[in-house]
Amino acid sequence: MLRALRLLLLALLACLVSALLAVPQASASSRVALVIGNSTYKFAPKLNNSINDAGDVAAALERLGFDVILGLDLDYTSMREHVLRFSEQLSGAEAGLFYFAGHGLQVAGRNYLAPIDAQITSEADLDFRTIDLDLVLRNMTRESRTNIVFLDACRDNPLAVNLARRLGARSGAVSRGLAQVTGGIGTLIAFATEPGNVALDGDGRNSPFTGALLDVMERPGMHVGDVMIAVRNQVLKQTSGKQVPWDHSSLTEKFYFVRGSGPASGTGDEATKPKEINPLDLELAFWNSIKNSKNARLFETYLARYPNGTFAELAKIALEELRTAALKPPTEQPDDKTVISDPALLREIRDRLYELNFFSGSLDEPMGEAAYLAIREYETMSKLAVTGQPTHGLLRRLRESGGLRPWGAIVYAPVISKYGIAWTQATRKEAVASARAQCSGEASQCSAELSFFGSECAAFAQGSGAFALAARDTPEQAKTAALADCRAQGGRSCSIKAAVCANGAGLERAN
Image 1 (cartoon, rainbow, N blue to C red):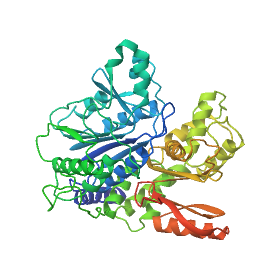
Image 2 (cartoon, one colour):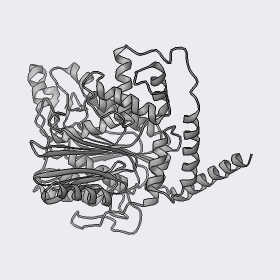
Image 3 (cartoon, one colour):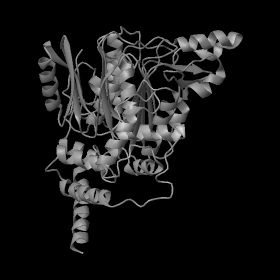
Image 4 (cartoon, rainbow, N blue to C red):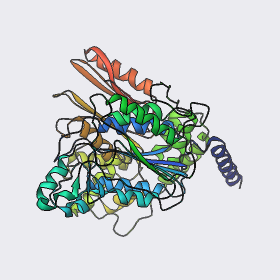
C-alpha cells in the first residue's frame, strides 16, 4: 500500500514538474518539424550543401523548441516513412514546420520532391519514385494550426531535364524550378526563389537561402513575415539580384520563432547570438522519450546522465521493477525452445540485437558467428538460460524489450579520410546509414563506426597518422577522451573534427 502511494505521489510530482518546465515555445508537443536534406543523388549530380543546410536548420529549430524529425540522404521508402512519422506527431501540435533541401521538379503545375534514389524516366515515376508536395501539405493542414514550409529545392535539376527529353512534344509540362502553390488557412510556404526559376546551391557551407534563414530566424521579436523580408533582402544582396526568395501566406496570426523585444524587421545584415539550449528542456525531452519503455538500459542511461535529475527517483523505481521482472522465470510458450530456421525471422532477431547494441556485425550478411555471440550476451544479461540459439522464445523476449532512441552515429573512412555524422535518428540502422551517406556511402570504406543513443555524446578526433572515436556522457567528456586516444596512438596535431549527442545537443563540425 505504501509503495503504491509512493508511486502515485511521484507520478503526480512528475506531472507537476513537466507542467512547470514546459512553456509553449519549448514544448516537445507544441512545435513539430520535419527537416530533410538530400545530397548524394544516385541519378543526378551531388548537391554540396543540402546535408549541411538540413543539419544546421534542424539544430536551430531544436534550439527554438521544436520537436525535430531529421532525415539526411533519404531514399523513397525512408522519405515516405519520415513524412508518415511527421504526420502522426503533428496531431494536437500548435505549429508544424517542413523544411526540404534537395532536388525538386514541377510537372504540369505540381511539385515533386526527389529522394536520393529517384530515377525519372516517365510521368508514372513521379507517383512511385518521388514525394508529391501536396501529400505533405494535406497532412499538415488536416488540423487547424500554424504551418510553415521552407523549400530550398529550386536547384537546376537534371532529373527534370531527362524527363522533358522523354516526353518529347509534351516536354512543356516540365518547367524550371518549382510551381507556385498555395496552402490552407494558417499556412506560409516559402521558396528559395520565385516560381519557375532556379536557386543557387552556393559555394559556402550553406545555400544563399538557407544561410540567410539561419542568420535571421533566431532573432527575438520577429514574426515569420519579417523573417522572410530579411531573408529576401539578404539573398538579393548576396546574389546581386539573381535570386529572389518568394513566399505565399494565408496566416491568420503572427508566428514568432522567438518572442521578445527586437527589430520589427531587418535587412539581414545584423548578427545575433543563437539561443542557448535549456538543460532542463533536454532532460525533460529525454525522460518523455523513455518513461514508458520496458528497456532497463534506457533508465540506466538517464541515471548516468542525470544522477540527481528531476525524475531520478522515478527512473530508479522503474529500473528496479524491470530488473525484478527480468529475474522472474519467463512464462514459457509451447514453441519457445524451437530453433528458428525461417530466414526472415532470423534477420529480425539479428536486427533487434543490432538495435539493442548487442550485435556489431554487418547487416548485409546472413546469421554468422557474431550474431550467435550476440544471442549469448543478450541471454546472459537478461538472466536467461544461455543457449546461443535463435529460438522463438528469444524472439518473443526481443520484441518485448523495446528499442533504444534517439540514435546517433559517427563513421570514418581511413583510406579516403572522410567522415559522416548523424543524430536524432529513430534507429541505429538509420543513424549509421545517414552517416555513411555523408562519408562515401560504402560500408567497406567507412568501416570505423561508433553508434550511441539516448543522451550519450560522441566525438571524432583526427591527427597526422591516427584517429579516434569516443562516446561519453557529455560532449566535453567525449571530446577529451577522443583527443587523448588519438594522441595515445601517436597522432600529431590531433583535433576534434566532429562531436554531437544522440539527441542533437553539442553539435560541432570542423570546416
